[in-house]
Image (cartoon, rainbow, N blue to C red; front, top):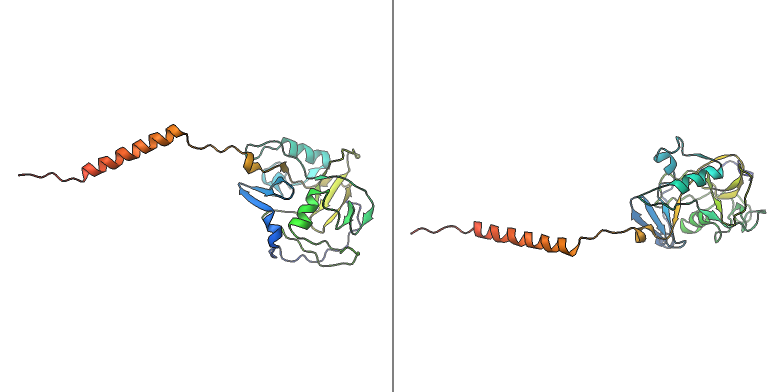
Length: 232
């Protein structure tokens, strides 16, 4: 379990709370289960429980950070490979209610998941920046099946932790830190706008030309069929 003292979670506000227009503007629904994040220039899977939805895991959980990274690396979605876990560029591991990698209201410029959760979706953790308990806000935006639990993060610094430990973000209470419980959830992201790099097969000029000729012939045929013969 995460090395953060967890208290009883205040009942979550309805997930349908309106997001700010600024937050919505950075997410683009490309369809087919892909959400582009223009702030981070990455594409998220829309389904935050895809390991379960796809049948990879019976309950959606994966064992250890290494297991989550293996799943993302092997993922092929919409014919596209090159997926990975959201990253955290670890700055420190000093517990705080604000401005660190461990605790609540953590820094968002070095953590892709934290940026999505706090900045883009406009959520609030169970503690404010002074450590005072508050009612959390959990918006999921265009995403589906987001679990109020730990999601694994890859460390962009390349620091290797023991096999049972890795950085996690709790999408239920807005906490992040170094987890050690083994099991956790995972969401995959892809660098850039996937929609922009997916080839679009447009009709060739020859096909369009042939289609036009066929339509013209059909039109002329119908015209002559409508002419009634005249008899003396």
